[in-house]
Structure formats: structure tokens, C-alpha cells
Length: 547
Ligand SMILES: O=P(O)(O)OC[C@H]1O[C@](O)(CO)[C@@H](O)[C@@H]1O
Image (cartoon, rainbow, N blue to C red; front, top):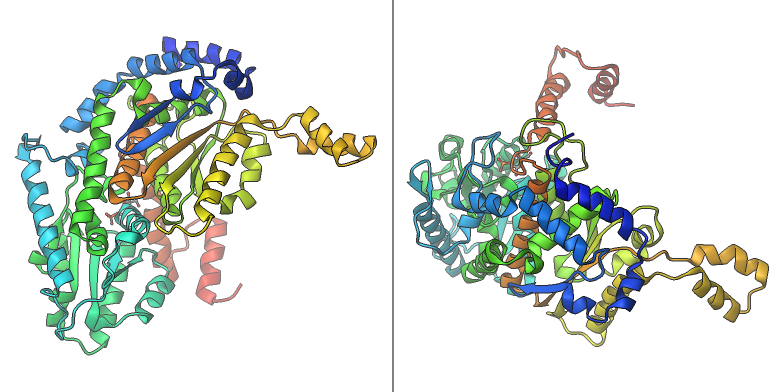
């Protein structure tokens, strides 16, 4: 038995789950007209209603006890102060420092990283302003109209989704595009739309060794030079963001055009660093700073608020409650805002790359479930698709509903209808529809008894399906920064409970290595073909160009 599953709080939660599983959320609401007041909290411009969860005061007390037994508050302090909690890579985890305005020195290996962060932000600000004002132009003297950000994983999804989410704040004279995939179609389709004279490329790679990013950058460079622009123009049109400045220089990027980042920032936590340069180019540096400010406010809330009102703690602990005591294997994130349609994919990367692990911090195989599948999409679209499974499927799929109260595009009754659908879904998931209610409905519709008996069970909605509702006044850089930081800390909370290192990602490495050996076999005149039968057969089909 692992340390976690032998903790007193874990046992108490197991027993408590047996009891509460017989209680319906409907009854909990009926018994307590103050339930939403008691089970809601606000911070950093966000309001969390967690009353539609299968919890009572005992649940919360036991989850808090579990957090204490795994020393969660101390672990959070360790992360913020720069202890090397990413122990498998020997690295500190300091994305929080990127958005902190504190002047107190923060040392990593004897270096005060506050100064490096400040200097990099200043360099970003100058660059963004130069591009916006046309002081940094293309080689032929034309102002930039397009930015192509080339990167993948954490060096892609954060910038892309934040830029997309903040469209109302865009600098209208500049359009950021994003290319990640090694599929040549991605970059080819993008380049077809662009004029090299007015295009700026930002190459983002923490390691500066990622196959997709290096290859796409070389393709972009070839395209650029093929348009009769000289080699010496590269310096004006290509900049890089990396922690490996030497490799960027060796690749041909001018040293002055390299924006540094550091190994104490995980890729999926890096949009707050210079990896966020495309965001700053798209929305302006002031708005980028507001994004950081929103995140910093959430950081302080996470560090200081008691568990009962601590949004990341509550959301993280509730996730553990369902994963480990109700057998939930997935968690759905539903954005009721078109601009936030990409957020579920961002949280998917953040959470699944962080907590998709099965070996604990003591290097033992875990004997409990860890990170669930994170998925989701945009409301109301999902209501006409996968919500069916959430309502009437066999498992428990906890859901987060996210809604800004004010739209950036007030249009007739649209926003009220959007909100009504959002709230209505949480109500339906919670309350459901009983057999008696379904029967009465069908009787009122005039159906015969046999038909009612056959149909009514299909119309039963079990309800008792948990959800959180997250509201904000409006989607702004500040509230978005707080929202993303909330999910980062939620991921941290769960990783700590599960005793995982949420900051490495060894699992993706094997695929990269094998991919390279397969590539040799696809291209070599004398392939080794020493893989398994299936892989060899696939390689041969590719080489022959026919199935
Ligand atoms: O920024 P890099 O070093 O190019 O890495 C890109 C991504 O690749 C990964 O290492 C996983 O493949 C991510 O963690 C990272 O964000």
C-alpha cells in the first residue's frame, strides 16, 4: 500500500464516499437553502459556484485534511521560493516568478532571476513597440503586417490560445499566425497567405532541438530566400525565443534577436515568459502585462487563502474526490464563450502532460488513479453532441462551466440565451429527471400505458452529476490570466495529492526517439527494418507509396 492510500484522510474519504453516494444533490439543495452561499468563493475577478458537487461539510473537512497530510501548503511554498521540486530533471519550477512584481531577490543556482525576468520583459516591450510603431521594419522598408509563430507543445498552444481568446484587444495592424505540426501542409498553407516582405517569424523553442520547430523554421527560411530576399535580411525577419541561446545563434539567428527563457520554466507553463512574445505582439505589451497581473493575483490567492475559499485548492481537491472515490476517468471543461473555445485544449495539455504519470515521487508505481482525461469544447455546440454522455452515460464526468457575464459582442438576446443554456445544463446535470416525472410528461402527452413503460426509462436523467460554474464579469487580459493560473494551480494541487512530479514529461520521449529511427528507415537507401512486423510493413508501404 502506498503512502497516500494509507493516510488517515484517504481511509476516511473512502468511508465517507460510501455514505454520500446514496445522497442525491437534489436532496442536498432541498435540505439547505444556503448551500450556494456556503459552497461558493471568489478571487482575482473569478467567482466559483461549487455547490453542485457531491459534497457536504464532512467532505470538505476530509479533503482539507488530505491536503494537510500531504503537506500541500508547504509544497506550494517550496514551488514559489524556487526549490528544485522537478526532481527528475533537477530543476526549480518558477512560472509564478514570471508574473510576480516583487523586488525581493529570488535565487536559482546563485543567480537572482528577478533581474533576468525584468530585463527580458523590457526587451520584449521595446521589440513589441518597435514592431507596432514601424521602427522595426522588414528588409524592404515595409511595416510588418503578419507574424508567424513557429513552435509546438508549450511553445505553441499557450500563445495561440491566449491570442485567440483576447481578440477584442488585438492590434488590428498585425496578425499572428501559428504553425506547430511537422505536417508540411500546416506551414505550406500558412505561407501561401503571406508576403515575405511584411512577415516576421518568431521561432519559439525552449530546448532549440525540437524536430518540428527546427524543420518548420528551415522551411520558412527557404521560402523567404526563394522570394529574392537576401541572406542579410534574415536578421530583420527572424527572431527566436529559447533557453538555448547558443543553439539559436548556431542556427543563424542573430544573438540580439534572441529572447531568453530558462530551464526553471516548464514548456506548458511558459506562456508568461518570452514564449508569450506573439501574444504581446498581437494584443500589445500593456495588455500582456495585464495578463501577468491577473495571474499574479491568483498566485497570491492560492498561497494565502484558506482551503474553504481557495479556488485552485477547491477545484483540485474536488477533482481528486471524483477521480479517486467515484472512479471518474475524465473531466470536461466547457467554455461558454466563443473566444475561449480553445481553452479546453490548453488545459488538456497543461493537465495531461503534468499529471499523466503513474510513478510517484518515491519512484514507486502508484496504486491509485492519477490524471484523468481532460477534454471539452465550446458551449452551446457541445450540448448537441457529447453532453448526452455527461447526462446519461454510465460514469461520473465532473464538468467545469465557464461563462463571462458580459459579452464583447452584445447582440440581441444571444448572451442571455448563452447564459441560460449554461445555467440550464448545470441544473439538468444536478437535478436530472425522475421516472415519475418522465411518466407524468408522457401521460400528459397522451401516450398509452405500454408506450409509456417502454419510453419513460429512456427519458430518465439520473442527475447527481457534479459541476463547477466559473463566472467572470468580462473576458479581459486580467481575468484570463487569473483563469489560466487557477488551472495551473489546480493541476499542481492534484499532482501533489497524487505524489507526482507534475513538471517532467518523460513519456513523450520514447515516441520521439523511435520516430527518428523510423525516419531513417523511410529515407535510407539501405533501411535496417528491425522493428516489429506491423511497423516494418507500414514502413514498406510508405517506401513503395502504395497500400
Ligand atoms: O519548446 P521546445 O523545447 O521546442 O519543446 C516543445 C514541447 O515539447 C515537449 O517537450 C514535449 O514534446 C513539451 O513539453 C514542450 O513544450
